[in-house]
Image 1 (tube, rainbow, N blue to C red):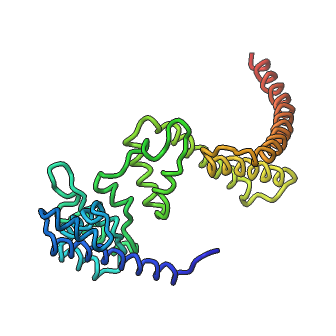
Image 2 (cartoon, one colour):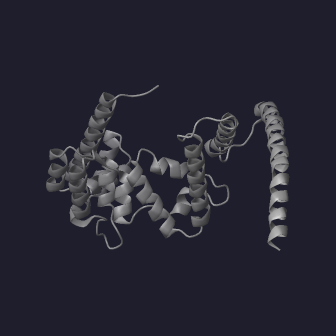
Image 3 (tube, rainbow, N blue to C red):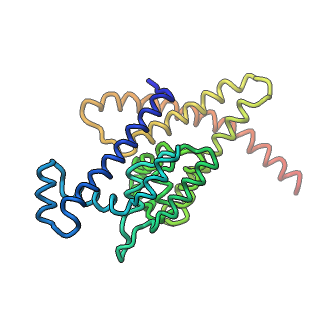
Length: 276
């Protein structure tokens, strides 16, 4: 199942309406209860079925989102989610908003328009503001579960994703080595594929080489999709069957690697003997 450009436009229109609706609710809360009348505020939230904590967030974001920045967003064709506005309005220690005066959001919107990009993402805005989560909050150091990281990076363009990953690696030394190793492994696989799929005429060894690369990718992809899964009783027969087949494939590959390594070792030994 896929989606069309029209689906994306419709989805963003609905997201824009959602942003405006939340700001309108925040405006209404300010008009009804102001900032200091907690009893009226909570009673009104109860009447409209809104959790007070959510109401406070809407009220604060609406208060920080000045008419000028709302108009600046509305007049452009670059999508900005409510989540991004909420991030810019989020108070830092001392009560100052993360993006005081919305100077950084304005710069990002201007940059996006000049570059022909159609949105400013929440994750990238967080990086610019310095409010992004640390890598250890997105990847479990014990299990290596990167589900949160994938969700955080989901939907980003390639250049944005690369900038954010570099920033995360620079700020967190504890997971830097393992993540870089993963990236290097991915680059190595890409180089291997380029060599296999390059302009060189197909030879007898290529089909098996491609099959081995695909087998390795399938195995690593399975682990990445289910990093912390726990087996239930109904899944055990399938797991045992898969294990037998994987052990058979491992034994087959190991035996052929050993066979290929023996002549290579003999050649190296011969070269050393000649050199001496």
